[in-house]
Length: 339
Image (cartoon, rainbow, N blue to C red; front, side, top):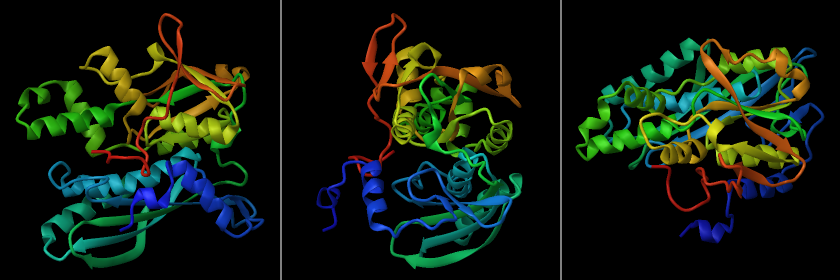
């Protein structure tokens, strides 16, 4: 009865643009509302409040056959923590609402919350409330996280300028590679588990690490001009950053850090289009490059390209040929599910 075709939205970005036309005029204290990784609201003279909310739905974001309950809880919170990290903020509190099927076990619920609470404790976040309900079939989770950042200091997607260099943290495509390995296990391909690279990829998928400390450090230094997290794939999220900033980009294929243990072509595909990495994507003016180290607390920081005046987003091959980099990461309004 209710289909994407009837909604007539082709992409999530299109839906967000439409939604912004319906809402009331933004209040003076709202620095950023709908359309970025999180909202920014001025509530004290010296600090801005960060607000973000994320849904996790069984069959869309996780499945019982692939994800143990501790991972489900961890991943549900990690998504919102990553949004706070993308603005350079410090996460503080969380509200968690969950709808469980009536036949779910108490052991499943306990492991789910332990996975979530363990991650919350790691980042100093307190779960202070929420809601619960019973549904017929699928688990549904909504997590709202509040954070804070210095007044006017929250990093947005919209600050990139032509000539800025484009950086990513960590390794891209790891979560998508981990998902491939987990699905291979179900088909009896046990040999996929036998390497350290495979173990790291599976862990990256089941228990992602939002880059909260890195985001806070980047915010304090004032080095980036724009920042967001990579949750739906580099191709999609870089396009979003460019659209928000009114610019284009060129990224170099050989600089993009993809997962090991697969062919170079497949590694690049995973790095470009695989989602749920929760790494940071940010832009840096050339005059600030000397202040940026090659890594932060063991997390590599790599330059993968540059911001351009043209609105095109291009992929540059090793031989110098250029092609359009279409946003082919996960989008809730496109066909198919992420798994």
